[in-house]
Amino acid sequence: MLGATVNGEAVFRETSADPRTQSVPYSHLSLELGHLYMEDFAEGAHRLRHHFETVRPWVDAARAGLGPSHAGGNPRISTCFLIDDYFSRLATPAVLIPPLLQAAAGAGLTIDYLARESGCAAADPGRQDRTELAECVLHRLVESPPPGSNGFRPPVSRTGWLSNGRRAPAQRTSAALDPAGTVWQPPSETGARGHSVFMDVELWNGPEEERIWSCAFLASVWQLVRLGLLRDKGRAVLTPIPWDDREFPDEWDALPPVLRLNPRAAPFTAYVTCSVLPVRFLPVEHAVRVILDQIQVDAEALGQVAARSAAEGFAVPAEVVQRTSYVFPPGL
Image (tube, rainbow, N blue to C red):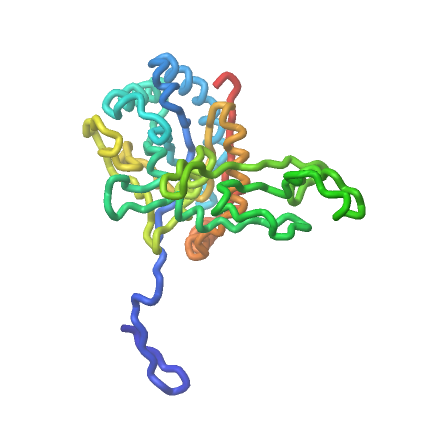
C-alpha cells in the first residue's frame, strides 16, 4: 500500500495498481550480421563463408560510421544474427549453428547474440506462460486513415492487411450513383512527396486461431525487440540467455529465443539498429517500415530511451521507424 494526502485527507492505493515498465540496458547500435532461411544453410559451408566475407567490409563501415560516443569513449555495439526456424526446420540447432559460428569467425566477425525467428511469434514456445509477441504487436497497430477515407475498409485485425495509403477502389463505381462519372482512382501513399509508392502488406494469413505470421510482420517484431521497446505487462521480453560453451540441442524448441554467445558483449537492445541483409530482403524491409510507422509503442519504454540517450548525448530520432537502417551489399 502507498499513502498520500489529498485535500487534507489520507488516500491509500494498492502499489500493484501502478504498472511498472521494466528497464533494459542499451547499446548505441545493434548490428545485424544477417538473416538466412533454412534453404541458405542447405547450400553448405561455402554459402555461409560467402555471406560473412561479403558482409565484413560493410560491418566495418557501419562501426566506423557511428563514430566515438559523445561520452568520449568507444560506442557500445552488439552484433546479432536471426535464424528462420519459423517457416521451415530443415536441420537441427546442433547441426546448423556450429558451422554458422565458424563461418563468421573465419571472416573475423563475432556473433554476440543468436535469435530464433519463431521467438518473434511467441516467446518461450511450448511453455504455458509464453508471450504471444506477434499478437501483442498486432493489438498496438493504429492504422493511419488516408485522406478522404470513409471507414469502408475493414480493420487490419480482420483482414490481416495493412497499407501506407489509400487503396484503389475494388470495383467500378456506378455512374448512376456517381454524378462525376468516376470509374477508377489510383492508389495513393499517405504523405507522398510528388509521387506515391503505395504498399499493401500482408501481416498474417490463415484462421485466427492458427495464424501464420508473415516474414515482414515478424521482422517488425524483431526490430522492436532490438530497440528495447517491447514489454509484456511491463516485463521485458526476449531477454538474452547466456549460452557460453554449451552444446546446442537437437530440437529448436529446446533453445531459448535469444542466446548470448559472447559473455563480453555489449547489451542486446540498442538506441538504433542497422541490418546487413541480402538484397532480396529489400521489399520485406520496406514493408517493415510501413508497419513500424503505424505501431503505438509503450510510452514508458520510449521515455526510458529518451532519458538514457539524452544523458549520454546520443541523438535518437523521435520516430521509431527512423531508428532503423539497412545495408544491402551487392552480390549477397
